[in-house]
Image (cartoon, rainbow, N blue to C red; front, side, top):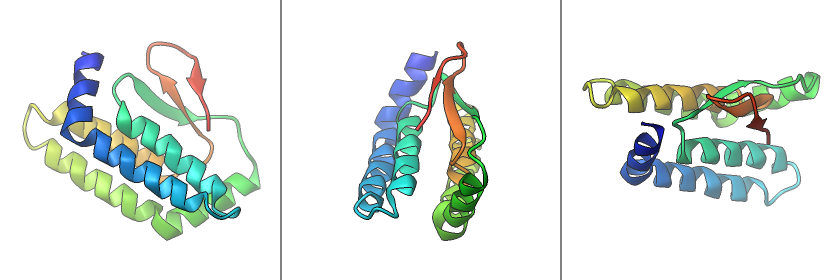
Length: 131
């Protein structure tokens, strides 16, 4: 089911969502100050490309700098991305067929709201990757 869900997600808009995050990440990486935010955009792009079979969890604590970066992210654009994914998730959940895709949009919204310190892990293993 994960493979079918990922293929449908990819074809029906996941590619454009991931491409938008990747382009945003490249733009943010132009400046040295924006590099940490660009890396988080690339993390969002990866999850937006293939969301089925992965989840996000809190990784090891990065200290006060992580909190400061999350607050900056939240104030500048994290809230808008979060709201957009919540609205998308609600629209997708209107039909029974769209509910699994709505759940994925809600999952991406949690990462979009507070990305620093979160790790993307496979749902069937404990191994994950961190950006």
